Length: 165
Image 1 (cartoon, rainbow, N blue to C red):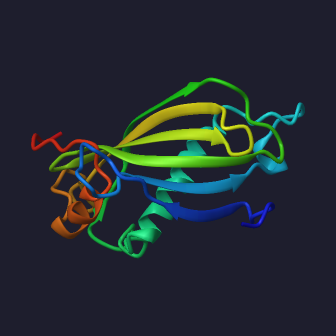
Image 2 (cartoon, rainbow, N blue to C red):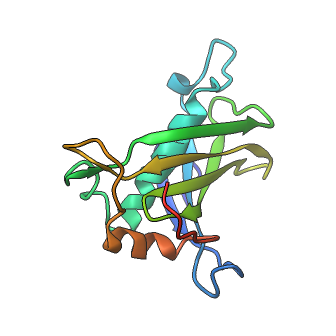
């Protein structure tokens, strides 16, 4: 593997989950911290961790063949909740491994969990989640996540709930 990947290099690994049988439950991708991500002390600004979460989500959708679905359909997926717990700083030129899991998959919402590790030291730098809700673009009302999308997300789930959000 290239020791200096482009700023966002998908490694697309999946690991098995006992809660989802033998199906994969996590998606991993790499990101090398660039100057634009840091402050004057070359430490990643806290808000950029949410950008890292979202970039991993974008890579995840691409891996699932859903990237064209985003913003192209009558359903949009706005975020309604976001959380990040910071453990250690990330610094300029650190190689980060960002892991995404589907923590909850409901009829109208999905909760993605994230862990960011320093790839070279294995230190857990941050963990968190975002919750996105399927919304009809015209009415701006919550709606069901399309079946074809739910089916692809299920392969990466930890748990599945049938209640709506």
